[in-house]
Image 1: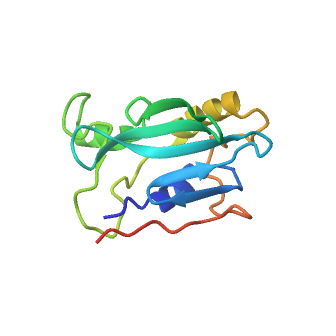
Image 2 (image 1 turned 45 degrees about the vertical axis):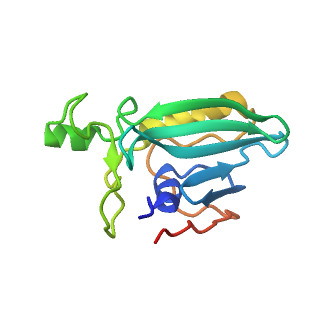
Length: 158
C-alpha cells in the first residue's frame, strides 16, 4: 500500500521549493538552485515493518554524494500529540509517536498528523545548508498548490 507520500509532502508539509518532486515515498528538492546541493526527505522505518517514527532529512552534493543526514522524530516534534493524548498512549507504549501502514484503506495512515513542529525543524535545517532558500511557513497551513511544482506519481505496489 502506498503511504500517500505525495499527499503528505504536498498537502501537509507544503514546502516552498518550486523545483521539487515526490518519487515513490521520497521528496526531492532544490531549495537553492545556485548550489550543487539537493534536499531529500523520506519516512523512517522503526524496527517493525511498515511502522514509521519520523522523517530523515538528507543533504546530497551532486558530485560528492551524501553530505549530512538528520532524523526528525514524530514524537519529539509533537506530530501525533493530539492522537496519543486522546488514546492515552505514553512514550514507550504501542504506537506512541508513530504510524503504521499495515492496512489497505482509502485514507492515509498518518491521518491527523500535526506538522508545525516538523516544518519548523525542516526550515532550520534548510536555512543552515541552503542559504537563500525560501523559508518554510510554520503558522497556518499554506495554500495547497505551488506554481511550477513538478509532481512525479508514486509507484503503486501490487
